[in-house]
Structures are given as structure tokens and as C-alpha cells.
Length: 45
Image (cartoon, rainbow, N blue to C red; front, side):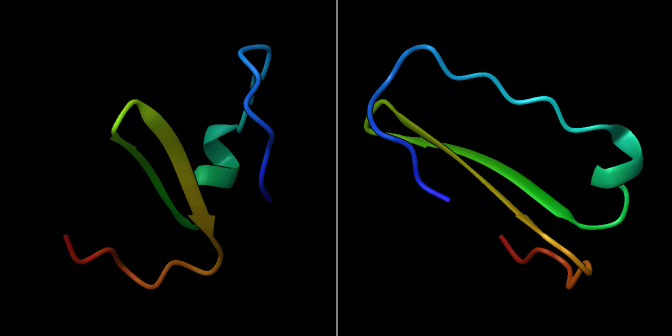
């Protein structure tokens, strides 16, 4: 999923959903992105 540059964007994800996958939020060069995948495969930073 991608969104156009818009300051009017909100997301609500329940903890029961987040607990079943990998959820990551990153910010680089003033651009915030989130990634979510199911099933969890572990995250290697």
C-alpha cells in the first residue's frame, strides 16, 4: 500500500493484529514508512 503525500492520514491497528505479525516504523529523510507482515518471520536489524 502506498499513499500520496498527505498530512491527513491516520492508521489504527489493534494489538491483537500486531501480535500476529511483524510491525516496523522507520523514518528517513523526513519520510515515515510502516511495514507489517503476517505471519511473523522475525526482524533482523
